[in-house]
Length: 384
Ligand SMILES: *Cc1c(COP(=O)(O)O)cnc(C)c1O
Image (tube, rainbow, N blue to C red; front, side, top):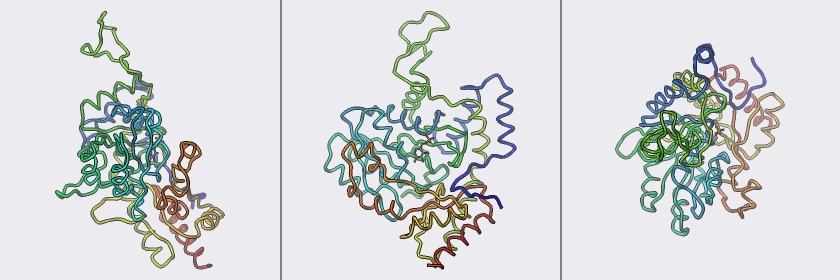
């Protein structure tokens, strides 16, 4: 059995390696046919019209908030239980971040909290919900609220490709489907479901937003004859907006295409492993993740709650089982404390943080490895 066991790990097979090798021998290393092909396949998988591949998930968030025209004087709401990038993207644009506390049952942003903020605050223009751990936010309910208060929605779906909730019409709404959110954002960091080393995707049904994000990805430079002011010849291009170099390479896109083919297997494997943990821990003093029958959970993470989190972390580490904590509440990072946030602002998030621990969960975690994790956790609690 392979030790140590990390909390998350990529799963790269011979087909993935072959795909990368073929691209290395091709004419394009960056922004070539593989990027387009990956975008098309990914949009199709989500059930959306457009996708733009970018350098990483954070870049996708940055360009999405820019595409929504977020800027100084505007406020955007997100959850404190997420990776810092979900909030940082608003700061990149000069906007102000507001946090809404989590629902302790699902760990997702609490829509009642969002509503009470909207009743108090002025100039809130958008909301960034996060499908935390792979549990999809009910975007239909959020959209109703967003419409009432005239907000855009950027879904941070970095944890949840392939997850869905069932809306009031009985329709499966896949993360990134674009029915309720303006844009959905994904990451292809190695611990996520699809690994391209670094990589990200912004998915939308809006042609306008698609064009805006595409332009911003490549320096804000266009060759579109309808958009440039002076056409001097076939070479003419103009920079019409302050953009970035946030391209994904063709090498990475080739890997992404190959990885996407295995996403369903990956999610199914994670669900099986998650169910095995849930069954094994039934009699232990542990809270295991909620999963409503109306959602498909993508299980990016398997988070448990225990009063003895630190002890358990150390105990497992000594046995070469590397658990992790997701996440320290974003509002308590020194950067956000300096903006005025403090302990006590979001009690549900802070209480969750004191108790949470992510156990190993990934496609290539073997039954034997998981058995060892289960035995170790069980022994820890049996010893008292
Ligand atoms: C991973 C992650 C990101 C950032 O993605 P990168 O590809 O690492 O930049 C953003 N939000 C969430 C919730 C994430 O888990």
